[in-house]
Length: 475
Ligand code: ADP
Image 1 (cartoon, rainbow, N blue to C red):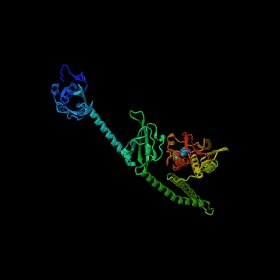
Image 2 (cartoon, helix red, strand yellow):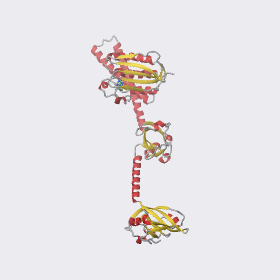
Image 3 (cartoon, rainbow, N blue to C red):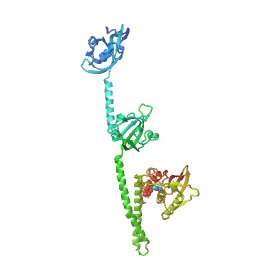
Image 4 (tube, rainbow, N blue to C red):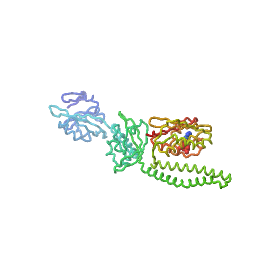
């Protein structure tokens, strides 16, 4: 197939075209792979002249001639796609991607047309992408957290090495499986769909490959799928087994220590009571003053020991709750009387006018007293001279809402978020001036939760606080 500089054209099945107008690197060979023509793009890319290459075997330019070309030459295939390294006139190799197609004349393959392009940039980009992907994978795999990416159909798309180590399952067996299969408990929609950008750490249990289970702390993040319409869920989780064991030991220790402390502390209380009540003892007034201070300190110690015992009971799941119908009105009235001496000494008035018809609640008698005592004592303790405490009730659906409103120091918005945390006490000087353990409200919340209610606080700093809790109505 002759080509001239004046008329660079190739003929394919009777169709003529100007090969230099083709934007790809073009070569035409005869069926024996001998070059018949090449266009300007190819010649400029590899640095040859047309006269030079015509008549060369294709192998002189291509580093290898793929075997798929045999089928093209035999007329058995319409197109073959392959990558080659093309040799430049300077001996360098250029990575190219080629398509080959036969030119048929009189039902026979008369020539083969090759269209190709330089893919050095593409290869470089691909290599960079691969490097970035490997880099990303190794960061993900070496994360101290198990990481699991879930698609919008709730199926696992990615399971990192730490996730494999924590669960014992291989990524290969987890990818494509519903995430619910990993969880021991039922996975509900709400827990799997946090708002975008929000994280929600929660305790959960995962199955292990060996048939066991592993406690985990899971953080779920929702991100919008890059370029996609749905959202991806990323769950990162850490193995909590060791932490749970340590917590259990710590809790056990606190329980045993508090339990052992309770005996001598109650013995001191009893002895002091005897000393104060025994009229035969003529106690010197100075000594009486010292003893009263000892008694006060001992009461504080007893309070702390009892709080610690209650906290360790709650945390070890040892809390025994026996629900029965309770007349909350009489409990409040009794406990307000207990608070009265304290309130009087602080100049705080106590108001309670429940009226008639306040329904009974379903609660544990002792625990209800504990809740009320803590809230009433705080309302007096964090009050101001001349202030007041008002208790009221309201039926809300199938619950009874009890409000304990004080006119005391109040709680800032920031402090309100931490109010029910264990050992938390406000930095406020008025709070620090009072003795306390920071355990009372934590216990109140645990008890109210366990009895099926809710507790919260409303407050404006400087104008008092209202602690509210609900309990189910007795059936
Ligand atoms: P304690 O009273 O022993 O410090 P609590 O757990 O009962 O522990 O209360 C935790 C903290 O909450 C208190 O230290 C105080 O900062 C705040 N608080 C509780 N009740 C009130 C209240 N009625 N008014 C203002 N602050 C309160």
